[in-house]
Image (cartoon, rainbow over the protein chains, first blue to last red):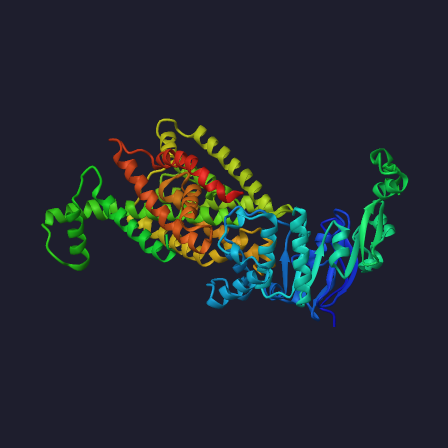
Length: 284
Length: 337
């Protein structure tokens, strides 16, 4: 039985249909990357999986149970949300933030127990951010803030983390750091569903990519099979070569850059850039 | 300061401030008279000359005690609803009047003063229009789809502006010799109209609201991370927010019923409290209540004592609050990064 199973869902805000006819089966322990242009419905799909929106048609099952029949706290104990890096206006300590992960295990008037505090410490330990415990969240770097929110997800006890563009806004080093933590946690059995604007992130860490265009699934499969020039052109209207390096991993290089390497002798690369006429693409 | 020490210390400061304020007034009373009176009154210890007893009874029980109690209730109510609003609207610059409750209540009070001779009618009218204003703000947010927090803020701006204009209409049609000065003075705020009966009627819902908001303060932490994160943590955001807005409206509207418009307290005190205890609402809410109570007692003392004539307390809270806020910004800003 698949962990999360999405059957034929459609969803729209008032008039506009955002998603239609989506079918997905997600197994435990998978790392899944959602790819697609701005406004394609990625974030909406994420909110549906978190139970924040109800699908207009179809249903979403969590371990075989329709999530519309589950309480929000039950969902929260299984699925955690890691949003795009966000600014807090209140200087909560990292400990405060991580402890919020215990809320789904509590009644409305709660006090944190010794056990909750230990769980929070463990979660910070696993992400190597224990030294930040008493630092105000507002003074952290973007990468540290994202790690704190991932630690909160761990403290929440959720085995599935749904991330909406978690690396957007992070500097290069912090992006890699976050991706490494995702790989490490997935080896411990955590399931990840994350959206990104960088196909390379999918090639580096994900097992499976799902390409969404105009509210439907355009392609769904292993990353090295479906992340190719043709699909990226259809998805983003971008001309990109996906190349194997040492027969071990793949990278994406824009045509403008890869073509110019073929055509220039390396002395005057700027002039050799091949800029395509995008006005033709737009009419397609 | 250690958290375990904080509340006992604040409580002692509150009691000392309250007792000290009882000695202040046109007719200064030595502390020994006050303690003697209360010892006699409550425990039956000692003896007091009957004439002295009736004078002290009148001064303390009918005038000063109700007034100080009102300051405590109003200071705590405004501070707690301010702190709750700041968390739930994810914005440290929000004050209890955000959804138009103060504008609505002021209009209600003015309307009552012009069209009714009965003070009870004025008070009911004040409370009623405080609620009407918030309902309009919430209604505007409900009929549009989108970012709920933003829509609520916009709804509050619209509703507040609407009732401010209505208030202008009332001022315009009011009799300029009697009613208009009464309205203007009432809106500047003052604790001189307080009596014990009114305090019992308004105090019970205010204290209950403070207790309930304190019970929900853990959820306020999650709400202050934004709606989506709060919902993903399993919190029924709409339900909790509606309840908290209701409680904050009860508290704020009742402060206008007791003492007219008192500005700035609900914005500043949560900041001061945050400087002492940090942003955790489980500690911040009760700390705001105590600090707000202490602050308003002191400000009322200043209003009463500074000049021969009493200054409206709304003016004093603004005059003390604004420079204080300007100085404090530097420190408070740290948390807004």
